[in-house]
Image (cartoon, rainbow, N blue to C red):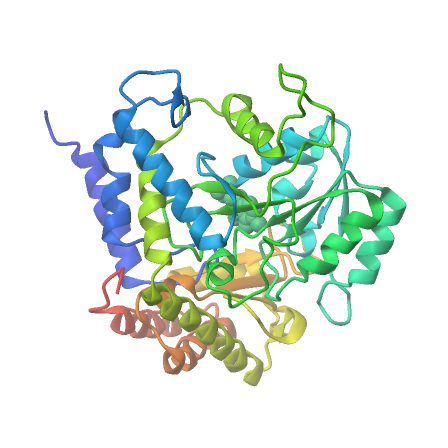
Length: 423
Ligand code: PLP
């Protein structure tokens, strides 16, 4: 067959872009060659609707073993009793949890997207805000941190059926025990969506949601450094509180309702090549090598945050506990949109982001978000963070200067030269 040069040349271009640039998008990472190998394997050819041992297709004897390994490794990594590794994405993991424990019109209490939450936590443009009644908590205006008393107040007023603890742009650790107290006080179920910090949580350097939350969802491609995808975990299984029974009259377990909500509720055939790649990534994350990596991610984030603060950048909450930071650029007289564009021209990739109490639209924004998961995989250390921030600062101070853009781009390319994508 003729080689599809049109596509493969584009893939080569994207590879060059990734190799030469500084990747600071907080939700991205570089997977290991083995994760890539598994995700590009013959498993992509296999249909396997159902679950290991209970499939709707023949020929699943091998993929059953793959999926069982992925589930077992996920459970070992997070100390969970249940794992569903089939969700195609973080959004679909959340959709399945909602479907398993909510009826249309039920109330969900989530982190406001405009304060750092995710679309799937009740945004009106997302299924979660259309199908359910969303109410929100946000951060305190002064501290930039969650105010748990305020969350408790909103919960007692709105009586949510489900509370979602998790965010896409919140740099502080979360108090899942306190979230559980709040959920219990109003009879709500509690979901932690740890898509962003799951790699740090897996290695015990941030608070563990598993003992406190009824459900935990995560993407597998951010700090966890696996293929693009999602996953659902439970620290303990329990009988569903909705009275849904099995044929024998017993109450169904909550985990069986989650399984049903993923397949056939939300998805058809699972992506067994991606599930194999998830298993590889979980295997890697179980090692001490990954522990050293994730500690370095956190150290790099703290060093980067300190270097920004030293240059009078306004970090929401003043710093970071995890792998990311959100910066309000208003005192630098540049919008998030213009900063993102100017940085991109210098081969620095980041994303504009709403900041809490933003005065700009989501398309413009006053903020920018940076994360250290990807550059740490490239091998950058704390001492490099000073250089990285100095280069970013030059661009932010001179967004329209082609000379500055060219010199920063040259410095970025030099910094990233000879650093493999997966160091
Ligand atoms: N939940 C949170 C907190 C996220 O940050 C994200 C992705 O950014 C998702 C869910 C959704 O993940 P996906 O893009 O895989 O649907």
